[in-house]
Length: 371
Image (tube, one colour):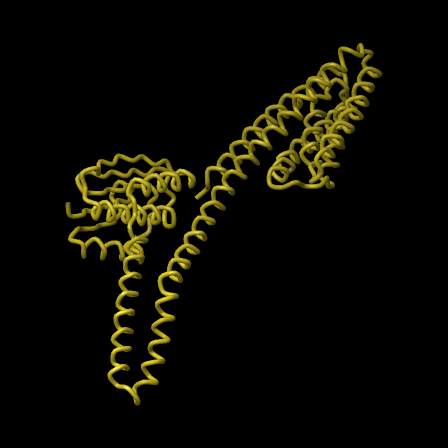
């Protein structure tokens, strides 16, 4: 399923490709009008049309590659410039697609250096705009201001818009990547914290147990009473360590329902699925809220891993959780290990669980906990 940044990229590219397609139609109409009015011959019109179609045919590929990375100028960019130059030489007044080519060049001239893209774009634009304006003035006899000012304005506006739109896409992409990196970092930090806590809990106890066990083994043949006392102490330390570990694990197993709902909403919406939550669980016991939090987490994981949902609703009322999503893929649904484990957890606690697709094309997870 496409993520929200991927959808944003497709929308931006579709928007600009549609604008270029409309511009291509206008330019083709202009060339045809010149041919019908006898200003250019049929062969010239065919060459101009071929140049225009070549440029606008290459432009979507140039744009897509420029949005994916920071490419270097290649043969495609040169061919696109030749195509638009051919059309301009045949129809001098038809030079409005030169700013578009300059905008594509600005995207492709991006490098790691800070000011090099700006300097290269400005220099290239000055040269191209100057040559184009001079050629139009020379051939048509038009006044310099009437040609140069529109060319400069169109070039600056087109390049600025192209760079701005790509910058917006890169900002969206970097924000999404940063969010994923933050989530991975949080998981890693939690693992480190768990490992550190276990070391603090068991390191000292196990060291003492090891020493006392060695001492008891040495005393077994010399002082049976003292050896028995040492082994009793070992058993006591082992029981204390086991209790501490169980207490620590229970602490890790305790989930906060409100935090889980907030996290699930963020995860689902980041994946492109609208999440609507209606939760009334203030009167539930801490145990019931923890069970529902586990059900919410596993249900959201199931949506993210096994569906292409665009909408998910989460309702909690009176100890009953219902999660609905519209991402049923049409295949027979077999509960995975996560849902099976959740079912066992709820049934053991005295609740109930079900997860199945509906005839209306939804997947519904229901979990009830004792109140």
